Image (tube, rainbow, N blue to C red):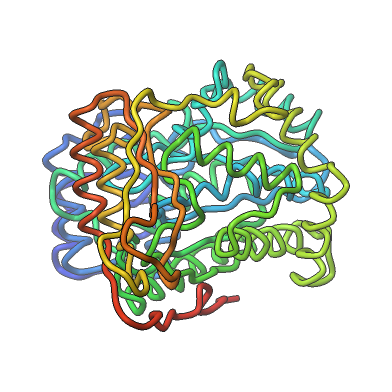
Length: 436
C-alpha cells in the first residue's frame, strides 16, 4: 500500500476503506508516513469530506494506533463525558464523583486548556500533588477499587491523534468536522467505554459559535459513536457568558467541592451539572430514566457519598486530601486582587464569554501556547452576572493574579466583555436541545 495512491484516491473524492485508513493512522503513530503526506491527507479530507463509514474507520484506527485500555475486568457500565470547551466550565470536577457515587464506572480522560477555554487537567493539578499522568495498570487498579479515575491522555493512548492534531493546527484544517469527530472519539474509544455524554457548547465562548454548526458536530459525534457501539447523548448548552461564578483553575475546583459538600451552587452551573449527571447515570444503567438519574445525583450530594467519592479519588491520585474539607484555605489564590466595578446603572446585559476567557489567560490562568505555564491561583470570581441589576460602583467581579502588570491587563480585557442597559436582557435557554 502506498500513501501516494491513497492521497490520489481521496483527492478524487473516492471513499477510503478501513485498511487504508488504518495504514494512515499507523503511519501517523509510528512516523512511517511523512508529515507532508499526512498534511495532504488532512487537507483532502477537509476539502472533500469523509463519509460516516470513513469517519468511524479513521476513529477506530486512531484508537488502535497505540494501546487501548482493557476494562473488561471492571464490573459495571463505563461512561465518560466530553465537553467541547467553554469558560468557567469546571463541571467534570463535580460530575465524575456524583456519577461514580451512583454506581457508574467513570474512566474520565481529560485535556488541558488552550486558547480562551480551560482544561480539566489544569484544574485538577491545582490541587497540590494531584497526579493526572498514570500508567494504564494503575488506572485499571483504581477503577476496580473505586469506580472512578481522572487522568490525561498517555503516550500509548491514540498516538495517531496526537500527531494529526498537531498537523491540523499547523495546516488550517482544525474546523473539519469529521477530523474533530475522529480526534474526540478515538481517545474515548481507546478508553474502552460503553457510554458517552457530550456537552456540546455553542455561543460566543464556544469552540463553534454558531448553533447550527455546533449541532452538526453533535449529530456527527452521535452517528460515529453509535457505529463504534458507544451509547451516547449530546446536550446542547449555551456558552455566551461564563458558567458559574468561578473562572480559573483553583477557584473552579473550590466551587465544585463546595457544591459536592452541599452548598447551594450557581443556578446555571448546577443546571448543567444535574443534566449531565442524570444522563451519565442513565447511560450507566443506574437509573431507569435521565430524570431519575438527576434525582439520584441530588441524593448523592445530600447524603455525602459524592463528596466521599471525590475524597477517595484525591487520595488515590496523590492529592492534598485537606482540600476536600477546606477548599478556600487549601486551594491556591494569587497574591494580587482587584475589584471590577460597574461603570453604569441599570442592568448588566452582557459578559461576553470569549473575552472573559482571554482575560483569564491574560491573568495567567490559561495558556496561549501549549508549552505556557499556568498560574493555578489566577482567575476571576464573579459577583454579578448578566440580568442582575447594578448601580455605579457595584462590584461585578474580583480578579486575581500573581503579577500586577498581568492583573491590569486581565482587568482591562474583562471590562471590555461587559455591557449595560436599562432593561434586563432576554436570555436564551441554557440547554437548548438534547439529542438522543
